[in-house]
Length: 242
Image (cartoon, rainbow, N blue to C red):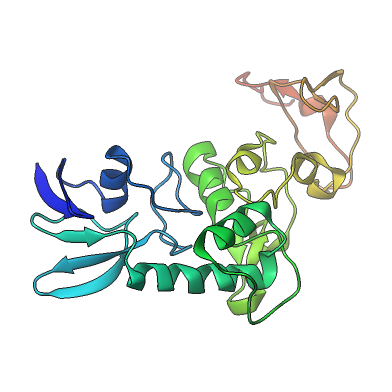
């Protein structure tokens, strides 16, 4: 066990756990946007910063990735912490001041308006959708591309593909609503708009019809049309000459 002090409270936590985990276990609120319990910590949004006193010095650390240290003193709401979070929220408001989650954080921290305004964008580049697609679903259908102000979420190399399985995990984890169900089920996601000769079924959520699960789609060698004779149930062996 690790013993440390958080906001004048002496707490014990398991070795290897982070400051954020310790705070949540003891009911101490810390705001987050890029953190999710089912994903590896990312430390992108920087809202979870806390002031850490250790070895005779004080500094800001991202609580979602920083492990608890024996004898450390942590302040979750000091002036240093509040100032850092206000700057972070103001930067987020430059493009996402219209997003309810960002407005709520700004109101809580006393930020009325950003000093700089850019083109509105629902996406705050928290990376939750990309990481969920990779770590939970395991398909990596989307990724963060480009750098600086041009950075955004997109299919790898901006090439649409059929890798996405339309599970809507990215929709569920997005904290701002930047990704919707229509984004992953619409025709714009498909690289090819070939009709299937097989029966389809309606989705129980949106009502759109989709190919019956359990079939894999193969393409002719010249990529001009679907080679439906090679359509086989998932797991079935395709014999020679088929």
